[in-house]
Length: 374
Length: 151
Image (cartoon, rainbow over the protein chains, first blue to last red):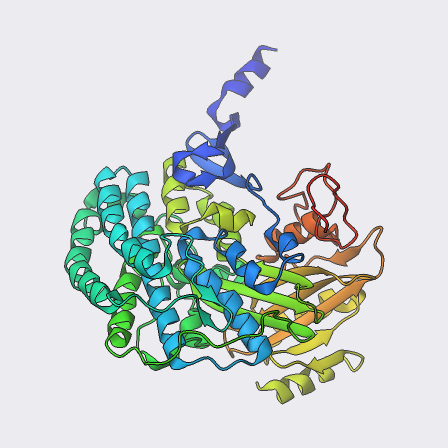
């Protein structure tokens, strides 16, 4: 009997199971991670999701295509514009509608602004997760400037719903180009400050370098896309491989690293902000003239068949798979959401690291919970 | 490989495969019992190397339940779509491909959760979004008198 008690209390035999979430500050939403620990070392992470499952795919089956667009905003709310674009492109592909250059350029500009503001918010909250509260204020201060630009043109700040099949809802605000150029000038000066504040920080290096390694083989097998995948050397940028909108007429670099740790997932996003600014600068000076929307039929019915459209959101590859039976409602819509797939790797890469590292690893995957649950 | 070469290659694997040239992808319909072996061949054969399963969707076709696999090769940058369906609505069963592509682990759990298709040999097949008292909402015959508003 005595021996038994002894056995249980020896450190090797103890395994704690703790709940991280659903209301944990570092999960940025209602995500519950059941973490098994031995001492402080993570043995396994089981994500429990579905707290905000709204059944968007089921809802899509009973509404029309223009209405579907407004639901996609609510998936990854930080890439709202890019999600809209994916559905619009799928509808336009199915109907074989040619859209004008102006629309393509407007969409690309808006997408890249969306990407920058998403990465800013990610940087802000990632810094905060690791204990650098100042990052949060820097990031959100600069993000406001982009949201103000959105507000002027789209009438809304975050959930923009600016795209519609055949174009965009409204024309650009007369001040749009001026404001964007002003912002780029400003942000080119500010972004090095981000690096001074966090990227070069010794404590930050200690907490992120060599943590949560993901090999290239696993990145492909798990289907990890976006900056998280590219940090492992997985060349998966849809803007390069299958250019849509105006990405075929701009030059930009696909950010690739091979190390695949938390630090390089971080650097990949910082570098992407530079690239996004490059893309915007190439387009902002000569936005073509023309109508901002093609006239579509009042009731949009897709011809019978299947359509797949993928776009690059701030977090990875979003796929929209539409099956149409010829009616005004889709028969089935599947959203291949990048966050859902990226979450699946968490158990694999967090194993063997400390519980405090789990926060850093989770932050570096940049998860947005409504996109996981849909 | 372009679409024609890919079609020829698929035929050389199995003459009975039903291959359709879609506008976007080459679509292959495969019976459930052949699914796993074909998936393994597509992953492992040097000529094709479909190593990236980027979308796995469950579909209710009315009579049948089916699963659609969108595959791409990161080496050759070509794509193919695998389709399989089963007519058993009571106890639908398919083979899991989660040991070939690790991403299938979560995506198959989602299909199980929303459509009720069981995947044999899946390491951890549990409900994902909903709890076990729910039906399978993505099925066309799913009825929920309280939450679904019908016109």
